[in-house]
Length: 124
Image (cartoon, rainbow, N blue to C red):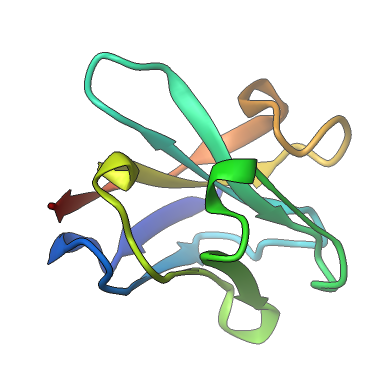
């Protein structure tokens, strides 16, 4: 089993940027896609972005289009989420997850390893 650890969250003002990191240990990320999800208080877990192993295929939710960018460094067993022009509605706990290898990228049930999450708070 792989352990995923997120970092990089924090409290920022609207319009600021943050870069989240997710590093795997215990096992390599293999060739499966990786995804970022978020969960705001009182809401369900929401898909944010995902990336395949080679990095040439990504998927994202419309609300982050043009603002968030996912990337990965396979040699470092790491995945990143660059978040620009943050908005108060981006406030949530952000989780990275390892895809099971088949199925849609936006479905959280298709991911079998999750990190503990990192809090992102955006003030207006």
